[in-house]
Image (cartoon, rainbow, N blue to C red; front, side):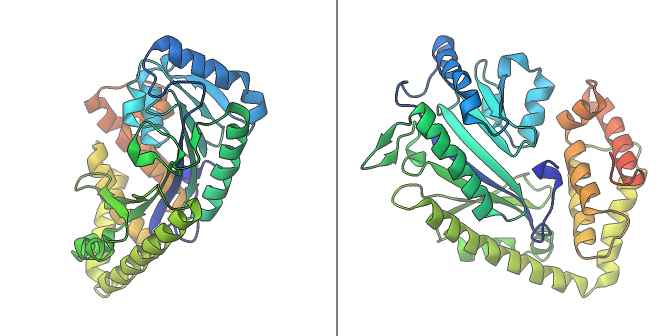
Amino acid sequence: MNWYLDVNESSDVVKSTKIKFSRNLSEFKFNLKKQEDIERLENKVKENLYNIGYGLKFLKLSDMDEVTRMSLVEKELISSNFALKRYGSILINDEENICIMIGGEEHLELQVYGAGLDLENVLNLAIEIDEKIGEILGYAVSKKYGYLTSSPSNIGTGLKASVKVHLPALERTRNTRKVFEAIGDFGINIKEVYKGKGDIYQISNKQTLGISEKEIIRNLKVIVQTVMEQERQARKLLAQDEVALSDLIYRSYGILANCKQISNEEARELLSNVKLGVDLGLLNELTDLKIQKLYLYSKPSNLQKYLGQKYDKEELKIKRAEVIKQIIANGDGA
């Protein structure tokens, strides 16, 4: 199963874990812009694809249509800026828990993903792949500074670890800002993923220089566990008024199950309420897998990929409502 459809014991609060290593190859200049330079980098990687292994396949951005590129952005496998590039490519496996961007801001941006809070396992796999690629391709490294990168914010370990959390109860009890202010001095970045919609935040490390990979992960995990504890306490507080909470959850479920058209933004907001209901055991009509599929296939490009056809914005609202009803009705199969 793809990581973005999977769950674990922390998935009531934590949606996903991502580890990214920014790397450059010693034989190429940094921040490649010209097509021929990027193609030379790609050829170097392709020549060694079999030796790298992990079931990775080479795909060029120029061979993808816009919907395919944006479906990868929606899955968070590539950045929106990278998707807009004329040149560049990716290495990706069938499970899509490994995706390496080639020819972006850095020569290679190695990304490994996992469901829920799984920092240690995702880091270990990322390090294993990173070390193998480094041996084969040769990274640009300084004894003093560590891995050399185009962006000063990545120098050192070149590691960006991020965790996405779902915080509907902290939002509804208006405690999100208070919790974030309390942990804001611990060297982390916090950003709202969808402005004002969906109750989802990303927590990531700031520091990459003068600290080891495992220290970064250890510090981030402590912060995330604190946020998880605060969210779960807020959920207990909300559940004290079970009638009001159940009403919110079932009204949201009712709209999703019966609407004739719906926007991506409204679906995301309603799904936040419905997921809360499933996690608290107040809504038994949906499973974790259905929730994950609803999140994925309500997104514009993945909806079009699933249906195998391109639609305009208004048509998408109608098709989104149809697919949501289909997922709700047809067991765990979309």
